[in-house]
Image (cartoon, rainbow, N blue to C red; front, side, top):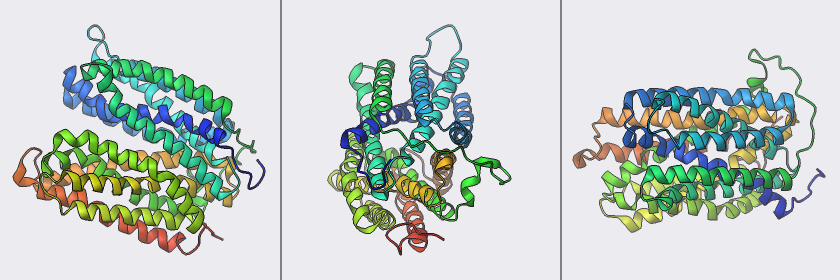
Length: 423
């Protein structure tokens, strides 16, 4: 692609379209699947938890391998399309479990294989494809913003459609799976036909690193601190996401408003994306992301001051934290794309985004693994009003501390220059 060439809006939209079904698939798997198999179908919770933990760990470990496969084949369009279709098929299986015959545990294990493999193959390849679009840093920000805008739309759709399609959640999820399969096929076709083709790159040279191409990005001096910032900030963002339903139910005592609060949060994130693209153009991606982190800290400090029944105030906090979410969605992947281009590492884009996706999934696992035991150790019990004080500390203050640490590291490494410049 010609340097500084502006990607047409229609081409950006075509690229972003695939982000909708990918995001729509993630929410049922992480939020609804445990309740479907454990609560509705009666699967043993200990067995279910063990299977999901093992599947998610293997899923996270697969992403760096998928990244290396991308770099060797240099066909991200083909791999993204194949992965998306495999994911759509897997969602049909996992959300339409048998009521009799084959056991639930074997069915779940077999169904999760195409779900997790398809999602890893599609998402890593799709992100690597996006990193190869546009030689101008601001164009790369537009590419990421388009993808994340469709992704937020997918999350909102997955939040409301299952309850609208049928009177019971399990029947709604089954129908949603068929709708998702159709959306995936259509979006895959739109993206493959209408999105810009990535420039063909020479295959990555063999790495001298002990772990080969998987860890090769760590040789890039700009990637290491960016990866550390992403981990710190990602855990800070995942903690309240893990605990928000507990906070709304027990601290605010407004369980019926949990859905509207989440919708406000995600919609604010979607609306904020053009703002963050403009802020990055004016002051640089790192400084804009820093502003998003500080806005999130302000939101959670304010949340610490709330009490039972503070619906309007928490709605305003959802708006503010949702606006900050837009920075977390649009700017880190665009910064990563700049790091890749600055070191002429386009041939290793798959390895970079394989590690990036691994970190995203690790953040979610660490958030649950740290927050829930910490709350239990501090004496919090869901539904017991006298024990909500620990919830305030872990939901509000721990994310603030992590965000501030991430912001300090980001400023030290990248904040003094509008764009990333490393020798």
